[in-house]
Image (cartoon, rainbow over all chains, first blue to last red; front, top):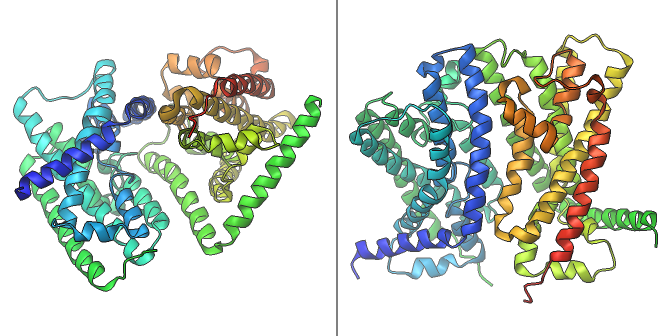
Length: 266
Length: 273
């Protein structure tokens, strides 16, 4: 089997693993919609006080809020993607089986996570976003080219998101328990991705900082591409740079881990 | 055995199970401290967001930062109390799926007490601490003409609020008998509820406010009595005594949640594995 077909099969597996739980998916859609409503109303109040806050008008703020809910589980912004499985496999020693496979560990898990991403986008992301678009005024582009540019930004965002969570998962080779790391991933993800407040609204030096961290590639960049606030190419540059750095770091850590660490076993 | 006997028995079972989990947690003290601090940090992020919002505006929906912090502190502290005491009930779905719920049924203790105390997580003190700190700051910073009634209303709100959220957790657990995989729906009402109540009622649409006042009466956790304490008009016209209704509302919610729990438990059919 060709390498491309192998990873495609892994991605399909990731997609189907999440597609199995239909009731859970419907429940997630409901919860994301409720949270979307709460956040949208707070943004409406905020932009009522300060129109054009962070360079957004009110409809753009609303769009951002719903996009955040759509991408919340799609990009596993607070963790909880396939890295949880990887952590469990490292802890139990099952990772030894993965290392035996004639496939690249990082690409294997990237493919699996991209499959998960696609399912979460279709299964959990689209409906809350469509609900938002029906009930509120949103700033959506009319040209198909912008939607296509947005799709590319989304793919790059998924790779950056994976890069962060893969590093977190590999830390379990040394820590053996992922609880603390998961908590760190959650805190950083929630705050730095701008899921609670758009990053361009965060004031001062803190705002400048969060806009250059890799989490900015996840929600802020796709949102700005969708609403035409930034040129797609500069967004892609930022996202791709972080993707390369994170994936390369993942490679370095992975080779250190697989060489020096004794696999857990019983 | 009468209802009081069952209540005493349930409380005793609850305390025994909770004590067991606390002992188990304390075996890994550093881990406990770290997760409690982590818990505090995660819940504190909501407040950081609020502070960042107020770095850009002076009022939100007409309310100032100390006033919103007052609502926030009440919402988070009462939710935190409910989460500590009965929040574990939201993992009931997992026990239903893997069949380990049957074990609870054959033990000689009320099932609800066992479910509520299951994996009792002392780290949830982190959320209560964070909420109480914000509430303490808000009480110092708001401009209120304190009367005896208003002072008394603050602890009443915390206890009634915890009872209302506790009822939501119980109803959510009862719902899981039907929903199983759809357990996440209850997050919309528990975590969604506490998030909603962190902002002033004037921010939200009238229909949403009506819904959480008359249908799912979360507004009695802090919005309705809080508006009275701060001397702010509530967006809906309610009679003057409504501000003092939280204990009644809480009692009603707890009774309904109890009925829902019994109905759910009766409908339970084991997976058989």
